[in-house]
Length: 162
Image 1 (cartoon, helix red, strand yellow):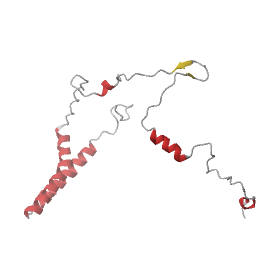
Image 2 (cartoon, helix red, strand yellow):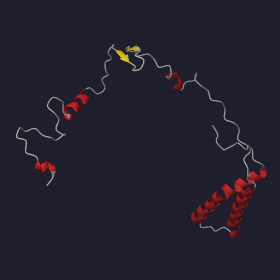
Image 3 (tube, helix red, strand yellow):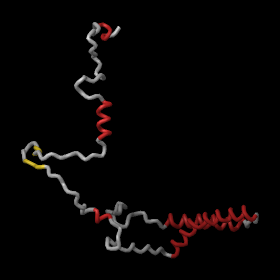
Image 4 (tube, helix red, strand yellow):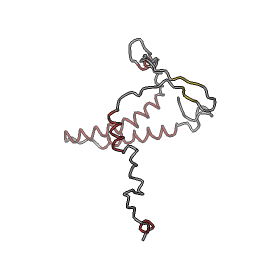
């Protein structure tokens, strides 16, 4: 038996339950109905001073007139607006490095293309073609790995770019 069972029953109809609202306060349903009815309405501002607390400086609330936002011009895409600078030129790799990248990226694409052509036409390619593409991939990967710098260009460079 719990403590609640030991209490005498209230014959007046009042309840100890906190979920039942008192009669003088609006219920949740009435509060939601009021919110829904007034949804989208702008609150009216009263011209009363607002206390800032510590310094007790008087601030008057003034109704604002709909003025254009000066920051709206910043986001406009028109011909008279901001023109971004041209992008920086792409770096030019050395011929050996370019050939290595072609081997690393081009060889798998070529193998996939050969597989598709083989499936469509039924023609089989010599094994030296596939072997050459695999060798180009491995050679390019090894070259890029060996020539990769072990230290950053600048000792204080952590790689982040803004």
